[in-house]
Image 1 (cartoon, rainbow, N blue to C red):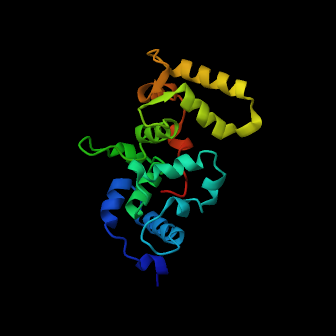
Image 2 (spheres, rainbow, N blue to C red):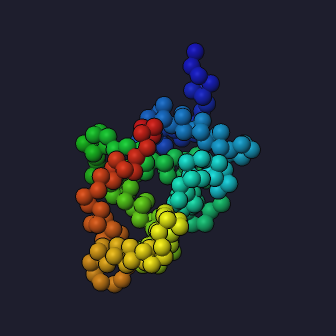
Image 3 (cartoon, rainbow, N blue to C red):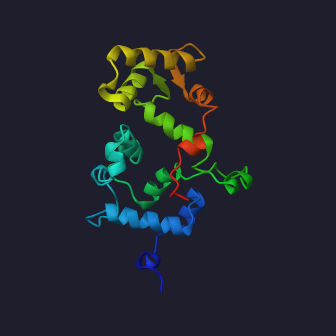
Length: 195
């Protein structure tokens, strides 16, 4: 006999699997985790529910990551929305790139989509640019009191200057992508359990 979670019906499971690339087994594990976080059995998660995740509580960007589950100021995320965000962290596999149909949307775990997700963590005001001020705010979150304010300002200035190719004092998504072209984003933004 199968485990109890294997008998749980996930609404629109086939559609979610096609969109996210998760296997049936991974989708079941994620559904189990979703239900465990939804302690009051509401059928959705709030920010407070996601704050229960220990790894996010200790991550300096945890609040920004939690916010990514709630686009457009929504107050709750359902299971498909939860899985869509997590799909950005699904490791890239050979079949993800080999069988890509040009007519279909790019997989959520593609390099471009992973970079877009990361870009949004830095673009605090959502204007499509990372300003020096935004870079400084994110750096403060990441390093805390380990670095002086002057050092942080220098790092923010240098980072924006190096990536800012058009001289507008901010980093666009294209500039962000170019500045990270040598980084193995596909692996660095992957969580192995998410296959």
